[in-house]
Amino acid sequence: MRVALFLFLFPLSVLAQPFPTRAITIVVPFPPGSSSDLIPRALAPLMSQSMGVPVVVENRPGAGGNVGAALVARGDASGHQVLMAPSAILATNQWLYKEAGYEPQKDLTPVINAAATPNMWVAHPDTAVKTIGDVIARAKEKPGALAFASGGNGTSSHLCGELLKTTAKVDMLHVPYKGPAPALQDVLSGRVPLMCDNFSNVIAHVRSGRLRGVALTAMKRHPQAPDLPTADESGLPGFEIGVWYGFAVPAATPKPAVQKLNAELAKALRDPKIAERFEQLGLAVVADSPEEFARFVAAESGRMRRLVEVSGARAD
Image (tube, rainbow, N blue to C red; front, side, top):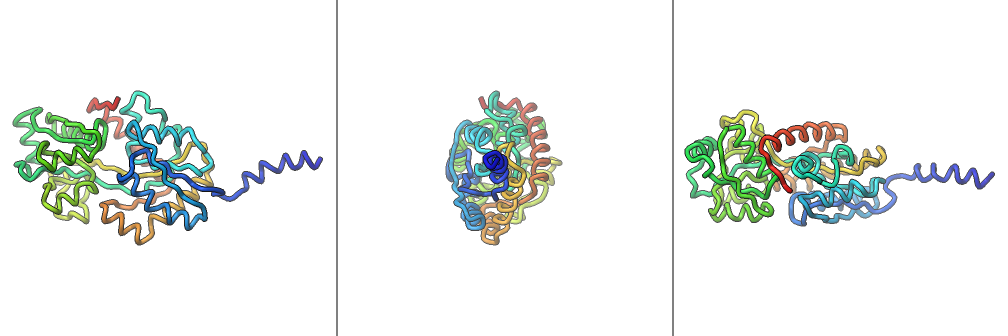
């Protein structure tokens, strides 16, 4: 009788254990150095201090982030393994890859949208382009001749260019690179005249004069670049594209663990030092609820699907 009672109560005692019970691993599906890597590394010490367990950041790059995303989607669903899930992971890759290795809306549960940054159209200073209207005019003069660089097929810098082509009804030459760094380097050297990269990646070069800011791809101007007009106010109504950085867990993760992770991540994001550091990087803190983030992801996924279909972009 005692044995039977023990066997009955043991699973309940396991379920009743407070979360977390051991170290938490945040899997970053991209190499070190990017915003996707810097964000969790900034938050991890604060989370560890608050939760009383180690919070470790582990890079698992490959296939545009699909390797790390699939690892978490199929992995530990107790809440102790968390995925850094930017827009590509939750909203774009499923439409770009024939086999991404995971289905975001089926295999992952959104936890929180940590931060977001718009893209910015930039031009080499020697290029006779000062406004988005100039870009469109030059593209119409010589269809298919005006080139823009990107970090690769399906990246936000590529899709930003495709959005301009479809919105303004122009033809431009896409020059993909293996990552944003080499693409940006060729724009800085003048080999390629244009790029639509993340604000946080290009703002320092705009301030130094090595690049010219052309237009922000957001619905309002950025506080760190108040003189730079948006594409929307420059004649392209509704032109908006950027990158957001969320966190997600396997779909089977218990709701209490999801809520706890959301609360701890939000607490760390609201720390004044974190807010100041993110502002310096051009990142705006979001810190929403799991439910709000899930609705946002669904809407963004639909928008990215339509853009990918129109552009014909593929990553494999």
